[in-house]
Image 1 (cartoon, rainbow, N blue to C red):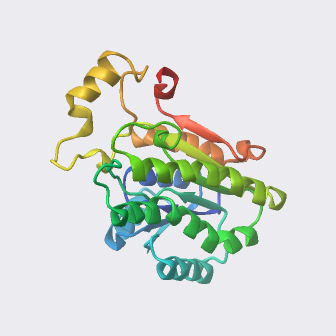
Image 2: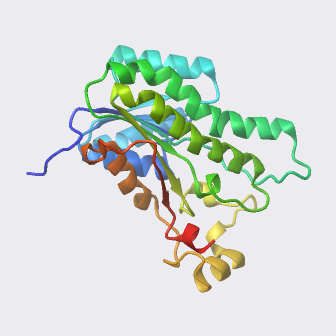
Length: 261
């Protein structure tokens, strides 16, 4: 019989209705965790939870808008009423953006920062008491991006937010180490998710620039993009007992792209 290494641990994954978030949720559920799919799309959260339950896993969908203090507070209250604790928090929810400094509005900049940076901070602040009330093996995993440690044109709001998540991870790890809570971050590179669809409806990975630079000429040494499941495994490691002495770390999961820059 397969050992369920996260059995009975309550795990919250924001943006868990699709993409990287759902892949992480599925992996944690497979290891026995009770998954809380937290997503701004209420139907998406419910449907994702139903998919997990249909596969024999324990899951619930609870809507949350991480850009809203009131919504995040309501989510934390609901989780407290239902379970009274949280062992694992994965701050994954984010939006894409392609703005450079020229012509960028401060309204758009503030919107991206509020979701991609402040959203993770907002959730962590709201959830910290529930995490501290939980038993051992308490984990926070922040999903940053290769854009948090590298960058390229037309990425000012997104790169700024993801760079902040990298150092937020380190700072929070220092604060929570004496409480036995580990805090780590993953920095995915190119991943095949709905965020890869460009404004014109085409897929980022079908573009000439991606296939020439990253595939043909090997800027990604593996010469392929990641699937969400490629990110779920490292996320599981950070949530597992094997990572009990790992905190404040930032792991690039990018197929080697950062090694070729």
